[in-house]
Image 1 (tube, helix red, strand yellow):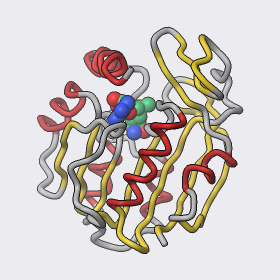
Image 2 (cartoon, rainbow, N blue to C red):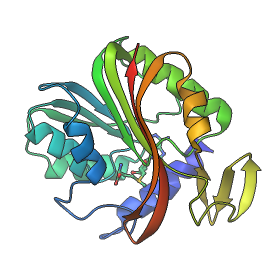
Image 3 (spheres, protein in one colour):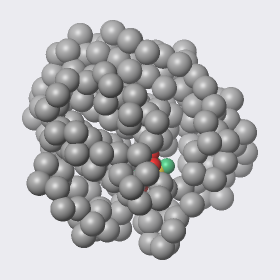
Image 4 (spheres, rainbow, N blue to C red):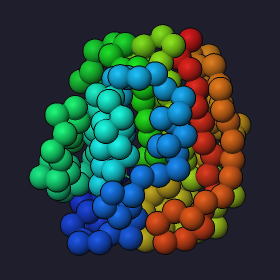
Length: 212
Ligand SMILES: C[S@@+](CC[C@H](N)C(=O)[O-])C[C@H]1O[C@@H](n2cnc3c(N)ncnc32)[C@H](O)[C@@H]1O
């Protein structure tokens, strides 16, 4: 599955103007919200950075960012574009154990990048994120929700998880987000909502939680 998805995402990132990513320089509302919460000069991990705009924004605010994505194509493009010293772009498949030492990060940021995995892998990912986050550090993520209009399209792989035209998505409910966080986190914000992402209206669940 991961390899298929790597090809899927590399193909999308090869396009000059991929529909699923942000325009150059555009910063997301979620990044602005996270910036208003986190401490100055945080050490951050971004998962599934895509074109890297949010990472570059956090770097411009003085944070040190390890910005990662499954797609070598995305990372290669980001490296060419990047001229900040405090951002490092690297390929990382978050469905596998990470190379980071325990308690390395003050903040983990994942916008639209944790909703691609089976229940089993998703739970493993949250355990790994818990391991590499400092006590008191923030886990901030936003996933497509079960209220999204693409929910239920294509082949059902397991509960709330579908493959549609090669694109795999595991849609989150608020309850499922809490289940993934388990006892390692204290939730500061858990909210569902709707927003225009890229080319269309989407429904999401967003979370800001503190590692206990
Ligand atoms: C919808 S895009 C979101 C990009 C960016 N975070 C944003 O909000 O615009 C999803 C990103 O997650 C990446 N991705 C997919 N599977 C991944 C995995 N297993 N590990 C890390 N990144 C992954 C894709 O390559 C893609 O860049």
